[in-house]
Length: 178
Image (cartoon, rainbow, N blue to C red; front, side, top):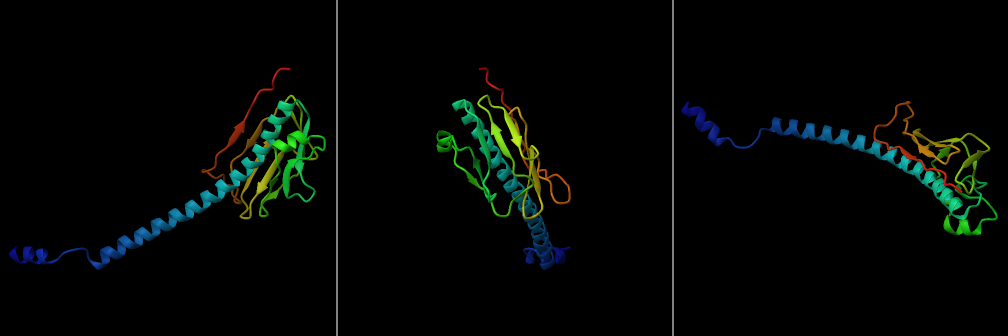
């Protein structure tokens, strides 16, 4: 036993094989985490783009109620920006500037949205759901209904699987009494 004890006392640290195994496991775990983070970030960015579009509609709705005036919101003729399209609303245009859509974002529809002074919304020209698709094939739906509610759905990968890291935004408000 004294030979084994003296041998162990002279050996210190880890063996080469142990270090290689731990390093390999660390690399695999880090790679998996980075891939997952990258996918989550892409889903988050697409959700943020949808929420920016939603916020534009909600802000226009608030202005229409505040001014008790009918406003129209829609896309520019080149389909690169989204904002107020009414010609007789300089005060509203002063409060709400147009947003520019990213070049890598495709939309399923380009509706004109009429927002009345009582807060109700009507969609002209296409469906009340706009699907935003990014360059990786991920999509998210923005649904507008006539009560003024705007809903951002979950991000769906091009495989048809819903992403679990996305946030849904549902804004509901009541129509003010006049």
